Structures are given as structure tokens and as C-alpha cells.
Amino acid sequence: MAPRKVTYSSCTALCDVTSLVLSPRCRHASAPRSPPLTGLHGQSSIRHMETLTGHCLCGSCRFTLTGPHNFVGHCHCESCRRATSSPVTTWIGQENGRWTLTGDALVHRESSPGNMRGFCGTCGSPMYFKADRYPNEVHFYAALLDDPDAVTPTDEYHRDERLAWMHMTEP
Image (cartoon, rainbow, N blue to C red; front, side):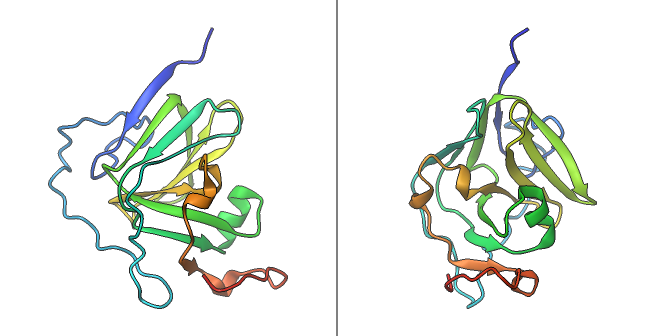
């Protein structure tokens, strides 16, 4: 049997994060928008206005990001490192209502209380991170972009957890 093809769309809050089937008339539509995140130097990270696309390793799951990003930044926390088997993860924070997932249904896992991660059910690529503490945005992996050079990280998070052998230039 062929995998089920689905299209997901975002609203101002993920009403049913396990299925990501969201209604355009979501009861959260009038929820207040979170203020933009700021980087280490207090500067807003909203810079990009273009539409970006990305996909998992096998291409079964795709996403589109439209409009400004809340931030683009590197995360050094242990949780992100373990979830991606890498020394750093680069995120794009995208406001709900400005992203779309298409293709095969994702697999979801609550990685810790209040934190949900979405994966391609075919190849296992991590696709997104959603946290209760950021109710109005979803974080997508910059490395999955069709053109990863289309964004430039300007922020860095959890520097106190950075691996000693990981040397980076300041964003």
C-alpha cells in the first residue's frame, strides 16, 4: 500500500500536534502573537521575506516557509545535539500561519514534557520542533532547506552547553 499523502497547514497554534490537521477556523486564530525573539545582542532576527522550501532525506516530506522568520540561529543544547546526532543544530523559527507541510504523514514524538519533534516516517529525518513555551511558532531545520544558503544564522542559543571542541565564528 502506498503511503498516505497529506497536506498540513499551520494556524496561530497547533490544535492537534499529533495529526497536524488544522482548521482555518481554529479557535486559536485570535490568540496574541508572540514578540519576535532576539539574539545574543538584543537585535531582532526578522529579516527574510521570501518563500523557502525544504525536504527530508528521501523527499517524502516537504515544507514551505513564507514571509519573515522569527529567527535563524544555532542551538548548542544537549537535547538538540542528541536529536540530530550533530554538535549544533541551526533552526529557523517560523510563525504559525507562515508554514506548510506536504507529502507523507509525519511521525511525532514528545521528546520531553511540552516539546514535540516531527520526523519523516520513511527515512527518519527530523523535520521540526514545537514547544509549549513558544506557542505561536514552529522551528524548522535550516539544513533541510533546498537552498540552505538562503538564510544566515544571526543568533546563538545555549552557548553554555556548546561542546568544547566546537569552534564557531560569532553569528
